[in-house]
Image (spheres, chains in turn cyan, yellow):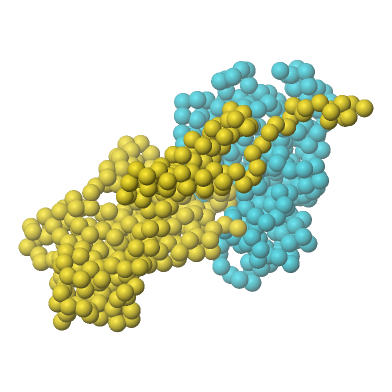
Length: 258
Length: 347
């Protein structure tokens, strides 16, 4: 089930540009960890290093260690494809596959990996859609294209698609930034339910959201334009928002920043 | 009240406008004047009449609009009229081409014509048909497509999904060069190989040359279509733990299938009308030869060329009818392509 992530001394590059430098932290299993910080501070880059999506970008490379329950994701002989099956991801903009129906979208992860057992697929799709609180809205139109749903429904469809492959960790890159407040609330409720089963890491620009959904919060910052982003501190969310140990965090959270 | 004051004054927001029918009236006037000028000056070519009418239309539009509406609106109307003139300049020759082909082609185009060869008919005699040419064209173009389309699509997949660095740049460069190869040169290239191997003309040799002509077109159009697939879809698939090759096969290609099909169909339409390499490599044949790997074959463009060169009235009729058949073939392909594109495109 849910696994712990231990990051030590992680530095990520785009070509020769150093995007984040020397980040170490622990992400607890069955909890929600939120990343906050100004734009360009490397939150998303760091998130993408956690399931080796960073190296999909041309020129992207990583130094350091990411341990998933004591196994180094960047160790020799580790298959990035296998890593991504353990560590799923939900993106900023809802991106259902346009050629596939709602059912096929949820089943995509299993089907594309060669799983074709019909009855099991039905079960998994239903369970995943229920898990994403979308089942009641779409159960009568599973064969309709996924792109016909509203933005919030599409995002929950993408979450259903991500949890259908039973990952251990779920990474979410600003999952609500393209959604209205009601859809955002639906997703936040969902995150609260999902943390019973998964380790969840969420990047957000919305500090109220971080305060609402997360157990622990990490604050990232960068010294200036072109400088690499760094982890300033990570702590219990309550402490970060009430009594952070670093002045920059307090400045950022109280809006005195920049 | 202030509203009353505004309506009393001349509004700054509303100026004089020409009535909606004015462009039509100006066009009709220009055509009438052009006919007058043409007849008076004794110009025989109706093309000249048309060009005079187009010129008058643009000038009159500007003059009238500038007087009534002001200079800015006049410029707008001139731009609109130029677009219309350009549209007509492009469409009139096309329509007249189809009109002439249909008019002359239907004379002998019937089932007999489509189902018989020229085997026992002399070029100077009426009768005969294009069955052997249709068969040859279908086989040569079909084989060329079987060769050219997969290689072209795979090259494009390489360039968009994998290609980095010098090899990709070299491939792009050579695709560009290939786009510019004249068809006769592609024919000569295959012919030189045939001479080295001491071979006689046969259908598949033509297919090879046609495949060379087809490939760059397919690469280019497929490349553009693959680039249109949002990166987010690739990332979504990769993040599900799907290997890259399966992502390309199951997500990227299906998403762009409509566009790729259209590109391949357009490339087929292009090579279906090629004459030069077929003349060199397939040679032409009055008899039915269904085997593209042995012996000379006919093909539609080559048939048209040879019949028109025969110089007899019945041969002219057959050439026009074959042209009509070729245009119909290409049009049907286009419609099929559009159908597939609409059916397969993401909803």
